[in-house]
Structure formats: C-alpha cells, structure tokens
Image 1 (tube, rainbow, N blue to C red):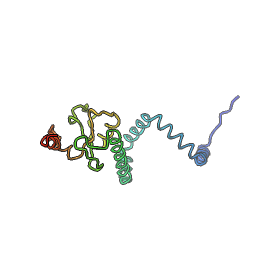
Image 2 (cartoon, rainbow, N blue to C red; image 1 turned 120 degrees about the vertical axis):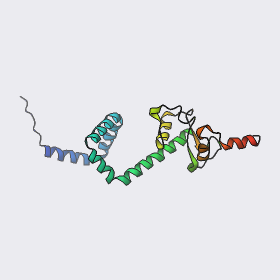
Image 3 (tube, one colour; image 1 turned 120 degrees about the horizontal axis):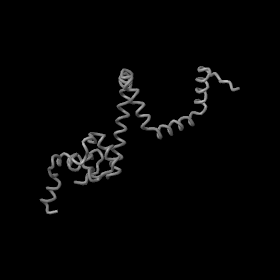
Image 4 (tube, rainbow, N blue to C red; image 1 turned 90 degrees about the vertical axis):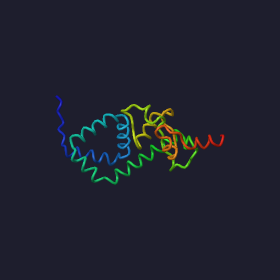
Length: 165
C-alpha cells in the first residue's frame, strides 16, 4: 500500500528558496532556456495578465517610468546600430558617413510595405533588420531623406547633373 506524502507548503517554499540560493546560476540558465523556447507562450501569458490587472500595469508603468524609458531608448539604439551594420554606414545618395546624420529611408515611401506592417520610428529599424529587404530600405542622411520625400529628386543628384558628372 502506498501512502500519499503530505507536503507542508511552508517547508516547500523554504526548501525552494534555499535551493535557488545555492544553485543561482543553474536556475538562471534554466529560466533563460525556458524563456528562449517559450517566447510566444510567455508573451500570451503576459498579455492575459495585463488584461486582468490593468490597474497594476498602470501603477507599474508610473512607478518605473524612468527605467522603462531608458530601456526603450537603449533598445532603439541597438536596432538602429544593427540596421546600419546590415545596410551600410554611408548615405547611398551623397556618401555622408557621420552616424548622427544617417537615418532609414523607405524606398518608394512605404508603398511596398503591407498596411499592417507599416512602422514608424524605431519600429522601422526593427522591421528592416528582421526582413533585410534592400529593395525597401536604405541608409540615407537626413538631408537626402527629406529632399526625396514625395518622389522628389535629391539636390545632390541635380548638382551632379549640372557639373557634368
């Protein structure tokens, strides 16, 4: 006859706590592996919790505003750097190489991008990196980007034509 072991929740919590303290790195790696393998499951679980707890979510964002902004800003910088690593660190029109002047240019505006995938700001860099579509995105300096909006020709092209080059 087998007897069912009755567990004391308090003892179990204490045991788990001491185990995690002793095996901290092992537990961290186990959690990282689980997180990598279950991204969608975790995302859905998180969204479900957010829908059930809107007040807690609101309070969290209010309490951690500076930290969240810093994290979002850093994440944006990483996507921007990755974009220029993939597509090049030079303006395809004038040859500008100063990183602060470079930006993403949507070839033909956003006409080639499905409506559901149109992004702005950092979302554009993220989408361009994930897809790697040189036919849709290219590095331009801000001057060339602004000049070519609405199908206009960049002044650099006009200058080159006037000089006979």
